[in-house]
Image 1 (cartoon, chains in turn yellow, red):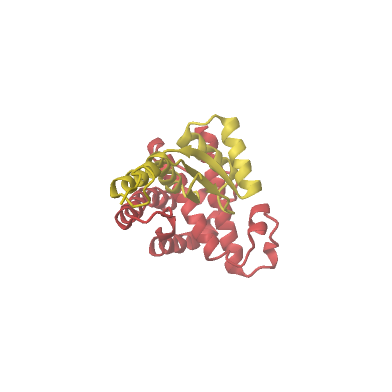
Image 2: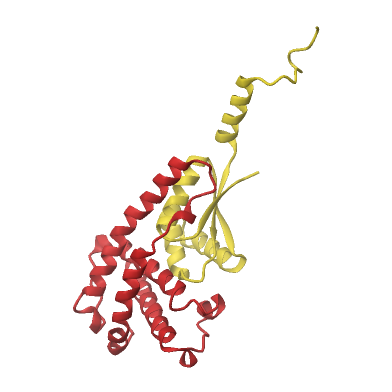
Length: 102
Length: 143
């Protein structure tokens, strides 16, 4: 049997592992805040400033996006940090989800 | 505070009940991101539960304060954030219970025709607004 090892379609555990690891480390994650009818606008602005260190203008822009479009992407980046931000936002009772940035 | 003290005294008993309800019905299971990791999920939810206790304690101190029924809000500086979160939690509880028949739009615009609603909704609505007023003032104070 003759075959080219580079173009082999046989699965390699090592390659699969690397792919999975790359995916976990490399794929950016989005931190998304959803609108809710309860939280006050100035409360949401305050939370964005506290959690992300945004200035008033940027925090207000994201708050308005949440209010008018139903959601806003607050941050995109490494998964661990995205989880950290999502946890902090949920601690402040903001409805927050994480999505892969495909 | 720009709220009549008699309104505060009228809604305080209801706030006490709602506070107890928010403790009883706490549920963070839908807060976890869509990640398949049971251990991480448990730690995440448990963390939120534990930290929510401080928030509720700060709110309990406000509601039990003898001066609050006269409109005075007294809170230690290092408890302001806890109280802000506690106020949010009880507003969510009011939303899900006393005000469940109101639409999001009615609530967000404040255009709900409250005088025509039943007493439970009316008291719930005033409690909801009172908690929002305290939040507004706290945010102004720390800004």
